[in-house]
Length: 239
Image (cartoon, rainbow, N blue to C red):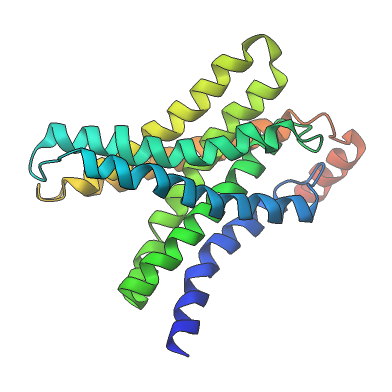
């Protein structure tokens, strides 16, 4: 029973965020089956990440009190490898799907993969650390992965529908997600510096602001917008 409870609370935040993202895909919602598959791809991406990261960790030596070492580890190892693992499935598989037919889909599929990754990872951490770990990660690591996914997805959406700069925007998608992920991890890794961890959550606040703007911009860029329906919604909101 205790294990069932831990697994349940480990699953809840990632699934809740995935559902929230689905409800914001209002102009041309994606097939449920494909979204579930995307979530599963995210769980698989954790396996890809571990297959790469574990051997890498065995070859490098990081001094816990060295700020430069920790920066390299946060950005170049943890953040880059995790975002690359998710990027492989979004850019390599879902990007090519015919249902990826509007800019917002880049965000939707990235979030689904990101939540699959974060949920699988969360189960491992929560089973090891217990309910306290679940609560902390519910308000930190899981939303963080969602924000990184939105930022990656924004640029992948631009890549798909800005053909002249497709490769460039694809690279930016990976680098932007890695950058914010790295900042978040770095200030947690050097938490031996008093109060420095606060900057991790400042970086998440900045990512949140950018993520909200990203979703709004891609919603407005949808080719499936129904002008009549939009006008009706505006009238209803104004009354």
